[in-house]
Image 1 (spheres, rainbow, N blue to C red):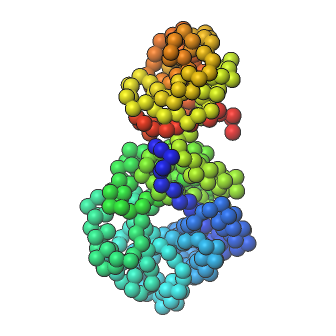
Image 2 (cartoon, helix red, strand yellow; image 1 turned 135 degrees about the vertical axis):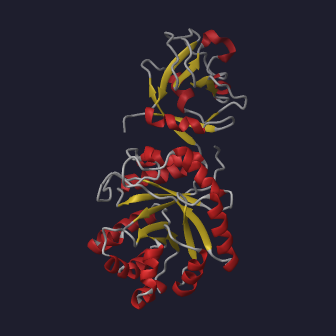
Length: 376
């Protein structure tokens, strides 16, 4: 994790029935997202609760609206829906003249199908299903696509999961994403919005199950920390302007940010060490603590820290060595395994529980910043 990480692209979701139900609200939502630098819009033509002919017929108007906002459109579908379009001259003509940037291939496609789609429907970019394709399938599909067209844009996008308990686990997500990243294919994943979660369950549309109830920006921070994500999409429609702003801020943050619940009695000198710098984990990594290489360099130029009551150092505690530790005074550490109380060490806080998952991405040489948790 460092300040040179690649830029993370951002996108929103707008479903065609929502567009048909309230075009002015859709225009306003697109305007808000575009002003915040969101570049992509995701929609679908194979939602079982929608009227296929009615919503697909609206695709041309919607795609032109998206294009007029300077944004790219990705349309999710399965081979079943594409066959219906190819058998309907009016729908085929509408799709052919719609400015669709990517067709997101959910399931059921073969390379030969994609050659015909490219030719007949003027589709020039495909999103592969990052959640379900196995490494051998990915290699075969990418090789086939590149063989018949060197100009096709190819990326991968993970599923989102409306039903609780079905979202992806983090380890599986990282392994799956690597199948595409190893071939130079960008990967997108979804985070939920809690403003107007999409029905019929209204329980969020995350890629990772652990993100279902999480604030949008902190779900995004974990996706970014994995190092395998190039784009983040809001799965639910009509996220609030506040949520979009938080998501943009998270994507623009150059380093990992972890929130801290402070202990009572923390001094301003300790706060300066915690929050006033970007911390760098020492390259000689310990199994017991993450040591900030930058905290003691800073503290050495200032006052020695007064000792406070010693406390048990439980995992995920934040500690700062005090003046009783001599030249180590001012060194900040994140505790990895339980350690006994030590009169030379001040316990100044603990990692906010929701952010503990971020510690797995802190490695030797990694950069991170601490942020005081204010309850919001």
